[in-house]
Amino acid sequence: MGHPGLRSVARLQLAFGLAIVSAVQCTPGVPISHSPPLPESHARREALPLGVCISAWGHAGSASASSGAAPAAPLALPCGTMLAVPQPRGPVDAHGFQGQGLLLVAGSFAAFRLLNRGLERLVPPPPSAWRNRWKWRNIWTSLAHSVLSGGGALAGFCLHPGLSEDLVGTHPPGAHSLVAVSVGYFLEDFVDMLCHQKLHQSWELLFHHSVVIVCFGIAVLLHQYVGFALVALLVEINSIFLHLRQILLMANLMHTTCYRLNSIVNLGTYVVFRIATLAWMTHWLFLNRENVPPATYAVGTVGMAIMTPMNLILFYRLLRSDFFKSCQDVQREKEE
Image (cartoon, rainbow, N blue to C red; front, side):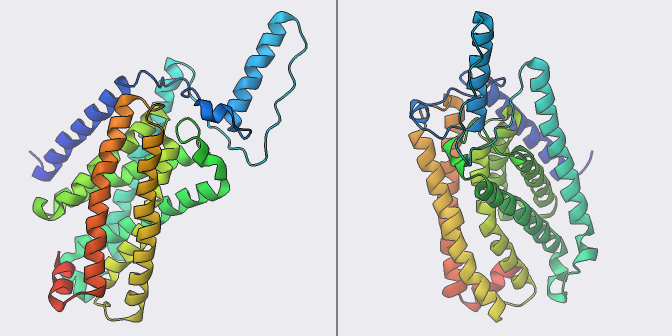
């Protein structure tokens, strides 16, 4: 019963769910109800995240009250400290936080699905794209997600410059919602490709989406590593120009100044927001390997090991296609 692609999606989603649950159960060092202990290097810094300062103040106040002494004075907070989103305090709160994340994922999936269905009326495909109308809708949907997630991630780091000090237990308001929305989009795009494209044409993207769904899913369920996921969403800034490139190709505008300018910006943002960002994430994982639970560290390391060569190969393809291309290469890429 049902479309064979949808049956495959159900099996794969079950596999993703089991992988995320296994990762959650195998991380005893990071309980859901509390942030992980701060490394010694953080204890020596003057600029602590706001959540740590408030927690220390609360413990000091309760200790003073029990001993009859005067309450401790509030800690002096440096300018620009980051607001920590409160963590769930018990089993009920933990389930509530997880349910909120799952609702956001489901709502995002439905919203991007509706957007995909209505895009043909919003942005009618040109005659050159009539043979591949589903791809036209798919690219515009992906462009909408890239603008939302990439712009949101960049705004988060601009408004909260101290975010990079603690990528595990604290994150700015709205960051968790942004990561959950991205999980919903990647699930929707996964389903869309399975239903409309042959497996040998889309296996690379399906594999990429699988890794992202698992890694981001852990952050959404645990309310941990949201800052690290926000770093990963900076990659979507380059994806804006990658999707614009595909749209220009499908519209037969590859010989225009707009396409040439987009190609240059695309390669520049590829190096800054994709290759450099992934290299920084790998470096961060290596430096913090003692502060990250083994299961989470394994998932992150495998993800980086997969993403890095895939992005280097894509960079080579873009460089060859846009600056050393032949007519046959352009036509083949347009029809894929």
